[in-house]
Amino acid sequence: SAAVTAGEGEEGPEGEGPPVDEMKEVVLHVYDVTNSDSEKTNNTILQINRIFKDRIGLGGIFHSAVQVYGEEEWSFGFCENGSGVFSCPVSKNPMYTYRERIVLGETECTIATVNRILRELSRDWPGHSYDLLSRNCNHFCDVLCDRLGVPKLPGKESEFLLRNQRRLGALFF
Image (tube, rainbow, N blue to C red; front, side, top):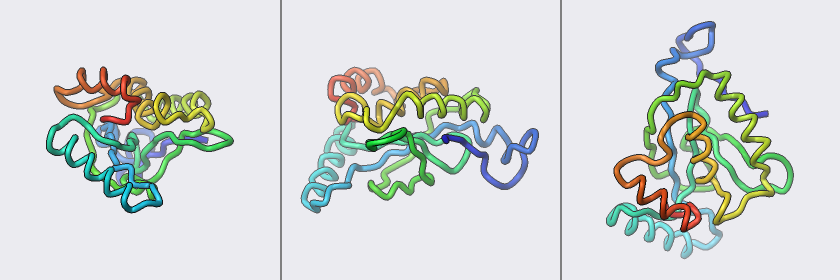
């Protein structure tokens, strides 16, 4: 079952782990999608991302995950049975190449509320419902960020990106 646990160290209120102010930060973790068995395909994706995101500032082909209250990041992917919602240690998803972290803001949600949201999303996002263009990790992160009350996309580009993200199936961030 999905659950967030506060990290170890100084105790926050009621023994919940680190001080709450340090844990309310919501971070989007972005990876280059380099999980192909073909080195040529992976290199092409990296080149696309360098040109479109780094040089032009429009986007690329990315995997995303959200971190809140702890050292795990939450995302969504395909599986035949059960929930597609999963967590892994921050910046350590073995399927992709880590690119960057983007602070989205602070949530007003408590750890208990975040756990409830993750349980609900785990039920609502079964792995078999994954679709590369219409229901992927980026769509999941948008929904999770919305539920956490933080912006889905950072910066001035957000209106343009949101409009085109939906049109392009959220592959272009």
